Image (cartoon, rainbow, N blue to C red):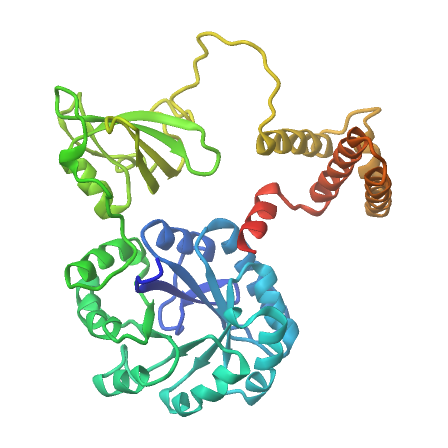
Length: 437
């Protein structure tokens, strides 16, 4: 998405309530759910402005950012209440990919270099509450800010303001809001995003319109603005279709790779899928298009579409909401016809299964269980064992027999999972953190 203009959904948060980033619209839903809706429907990033006044509420905002980071895959840009370097760290550790510093506070400008040196300049943005700060852009760049966030005088920058933004030596984000419809918003965005120094826009949308970001992208695409939409590398005419003009589609969960279902597409449903980012099929029984989830709410959001070597079958990786099967089952493939026992060696599945047993022991203690013994003794005992096992790995690594290392690493991982269960950390959070590095 290097050359694509970003559409970023903007939120503010205070006293347990989500707002538009500027505080003018109050939302009913929880922040993580609002962000999920926006991202599922095309938002490239999430912007969260911490509008808290007290330290206690600031911590609540940090908690809401953590929840949101666990919910969406897209990057989060956070800031708004930075008093010291520790606040920058809190936002980043909560899951933000970058933090913005409000340059109207000189203390923020003073800490910009230290923040960039410690966390990396790619994680530090400069937020300018008005365009009078544009004359200090070079200073902010020298201090380590990698992006400027420019707030114009109106809902979107004027032509004159875009001219000023276009003259700065780094890319910027602008704000866009106050429109009656996405069509009206697209009209203003076409001009703003046409500026070469504007990398994207932070949007303000009504709660009922959070699912219209992809629609907005398609309008912009029609106007020649490149955004991150789904484009097929092969034309439909190159697909090998069945006698009925359809192509089968195998659907997998994009994270677990679990096969969820199989359905069919015609050209119209394929194009609808690309345009909306939601899986749309052709129902052979009803002889019409079928938007998966339109009735049940169990939408399938596209992550990737691939075609096999014969060009006659599509493999879709999706984010599944709820159940894929009409029976209410997660997958349509739940009836075993024949099976032979085998040892599961998929690393992720093994980790999840062992971790599941540990969590079950925590919830349902079993007499004589070593895992329950550790939980009963508490965090100090768990940490002591973890330290011992780490030392055992070091000792084993000095010995020529690799079997010892495997054995000790396995012991360490088990005790680490006990610690994770005790502290409420999941494998998904660990893998997400690793993926962000």
